[in-house]
Image 1 (cartoon, rainbow, N blue to C red):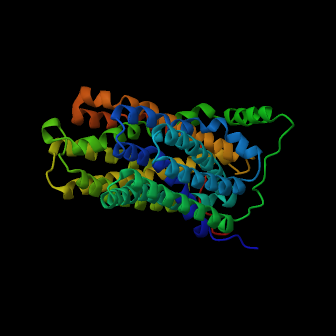
Image 2 (cartoon, rainbow, N blue to C red):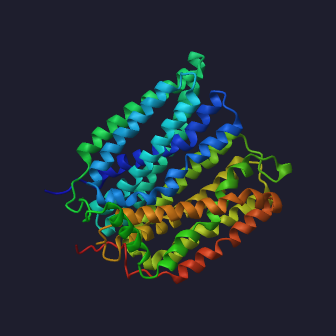
Image 3 (cartoon, one colour):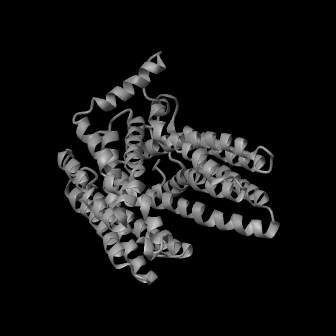
Length: 427
């Protein structure tokens, strides 16, 4: 039988991958603020919720070794739906902070594990050229989930709170809605996901721990692993710092070197125009790589990603008063970022699947790639605020332009098979 079209299941799978992350990392902050939790507690407790995504490679071999990825996806979506319902049950209680944090921790681990299974299934269900072609599609629906979570659900919670007079009741309703939606998503994917023959548990011995260690060892025994890790850690070195300061730069008054925009204007420029340009760039980048191959497009798309950082230098120097010019600049930068990030995603598919795509541990190895990606975002971002305070906004954005150089140096050292990711129209 012919496999179902990727359009049937990729949008739902990656929308479902992004939503729990947004809930844990963003919606939880808004909810706790509405419920009267102090900023100190919010910052401390919710920062720890990011940890499961950083360390998920530690248990990624288990997803490879125990059962099919399809079953993992459906089961974990049911678990996440149940976790949303548990949040709804615990929000009205007197110990809501402790109880909801415990549930968010469980949700974070389930969501991180779902990421492992979903990314592994994606590589098993699609041939390499289709993986490259649908990189933009999966990124688009992941980002649409972010818009739905950070925008739509926050607006809904605020509207319900105004009507009911109770923030707790409003957030209870929002999480009941999320629980019902995720349960429906699990049922849909149980029907929609294909059943690729390659989706089976990897061979293992009687010692599970030894098998897991062997999976990790196989990743680090790859030829040129030092060059691979250098690229994974340095490709987003500049972006990791830039992202931390874009929103404060837009909100800070001109006297402090910022643009003095209102919150809703930032939402228009960065959350609407920027996301639309990012989505378009991601779709075009994935399609372009599938037509031309990663080898030919590595450097052009890297330039598309990193050169637009200079628009923030121009904004910091000019400090335009109108929203239009800011929106144009943000759209240019985000479009270039969408183009360039498609290169990074296809490279991770290459590392995880191997040049021939026949790596039996591709799920675990892709999770290791994303773990190094998270580390490459986390560590540079920690010092971004200190650097901005030292250099000012103009100096900081000049620095982010210079900080793109390590990515180019790392790219010069990696080795990519000819035409990897390119679609073969004869097949």
